[in-house]
Image (cartoon, helix red, strand yellow):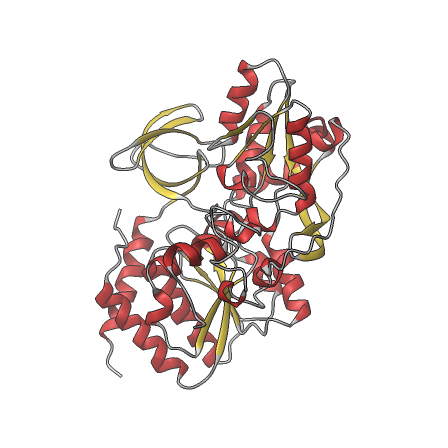
Length: 73
Length: 351
């Protein structure tokens, strides 16, 4: 039930927005976030954006994982 | 956005790093999120991990921990002609005698509270939204109530807070938990701070297989180094302060009260009750429904599974008398219940 899906904001009108999941678009609400812009990636849960995703942090985590995996004993 | 695809090679390497760290020590790690369990079982992560690292599920399925008394309240309302709306997962959860799926009445599945309000706007009779879910879900309910809803719209306020359940589990000590993998999306809302009161190693993790393995790696490392901290392995979605806007809205609408959970006795300050300004939305008050718990012996061990004291295949009924088509307990009903997940993905520990 705590499933939240990353999606890109493609339209905003007040607190209503449309997000794009890749193959599917959905109307969502932005009541729980401030300063959302078109093009931002957000996590969507039960029709509400609950957080903006940080692309830099995403890349950083992957970098750490790859570095960890390449470490020899 | 960079996708965290399941890269088996990378996953295996991280798993072998965990094995190097843990050596021969037996460690038990609890997660409290059904979405974590789905990923763990679906991607077979337990089979990648060392056998002496036991990853168990605690009370992380909101539908499963919703007590029978609250399910019965929704059934009673449906029988009395009220339209009940809720997330699909809840429909087959057994109450005392029946479930919402089997009751004679108008019961509708919705994907968000906004859809429930749309129904209320179209019909003349009363509409109740059975509001379940943890801190991830509660802000959407709160935001909707703050915006306002038609006079025929009510909710059963069943949202619950995760940290009080962790506090209760740690006060018992019977599950022997060496560390917690913390729920990523609950933490998206509440942030890192609320977990700092617990003197146990903890790591917040995301939901892709690599996220979970990374979280487990950090947690095992922390345990082995004798530290006791809250670390964050899901930084792309979880900030130190969480989501302050969502917290504010949630706190303006709800306040914590002592409450029973399925599988648990009364847990202090664990359920979200409606504040005075929003009391008029409370279906239990409006329709004068009293919550009644009834003890029923079925042989189901969901209560132990929810506390992390047993795994699904410890249960004599699992996959025999109890299946998704004929669930005996709530953990076999919800898509996020441990038994349902293990049934679907063939996860087993015991022979």
